[in-house]
Length: 429
Image 1 (cartoon, rainbow, N blue to C red):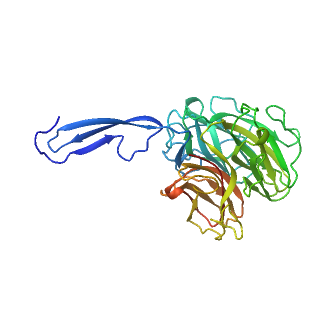
Image 2 (image 1 turned 90 degrees about the vertical axis):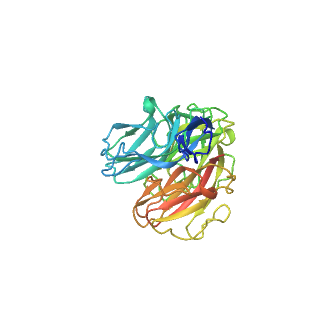
Image 3 (image 1 turned 90 degrees about the horizontal axis):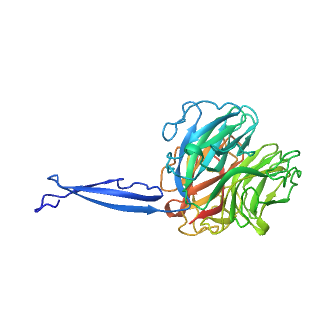
């Protein structure tokens, strides 16, 4: 209805309301205008969003520790997970993840571990694979990034081999139309004596020597096609003979000034790696000091995908006299407790202006006390979620798929004083 005379300014209400964050796909917005005499007029329009990956502000989906909250109150303070148990965690429809999402990017942390063990993350409804996402020793706090296919009932399963507390945060989702192919995790490398891989290749080959490069063949194995552009790996070092680092990069390229894992003697450290596939369908792993190596594959990006894998490049290193790819973000000394460090991502290391999401490897070293780091898009408040959890003097890396925020920057909040290192491995346009 239309008024025949001036009856005042109309008010407009829309559903979903103004300022809403839309899920991928098509959303219909219905708006109603009401004037001062109660006459109304309605209008509708549609908003369509499509992408290979939707980054989210990190949100906590589970925290078994007593008194700890989650984004929606579910799976908060449920108590220590028993050895040999499996937590079935609903992820679809929570923390900004759409109900029909095909896969999610998670940060998984174990704390208060009772004995040496491992966590395996896999889609509920699928067989538990012979693979691990976190390997830990008693009393440690270890995080790791995980990209997992969503299983039956919109759930992801977490098997714990020993008693442990578990924390799970979500930072992104893949729509069902995404070209990313999540697969049930499969072991493709294990250098330890007597250990096996999914196809019998690259198993029990012996520890990688200091300064060596291990060539990992990934194309054509465990469901990865011969022409895959990039693979999602979980790489673990165990039984290292001394402190050092590992760098994962496409074979055929020069080893970059960047690291994926930083470790100390006799410690087991895992990390998620989204690696560009290089010459011969291979990914190369350089280790600074001698160590056993494990690698599990959990998905791949096919040729032609919008995800752009890069040779890793260093964007931030607060340690004295340490370089970055272009000199920016180098030095500056220890970051004080409760500080926020903004890292310029776009326009550096091969990431173009306009990129929406960055795949980063973030490392803390020389921490003064136990704490955590939250990685999030600059322009919002630090979220109730962590990307790394660490203890004093520990060197801990973690892969983070981060939404890029204001002015092309990603922000790092550290709860305790520490040095920070950040490398970029790829981006979504």
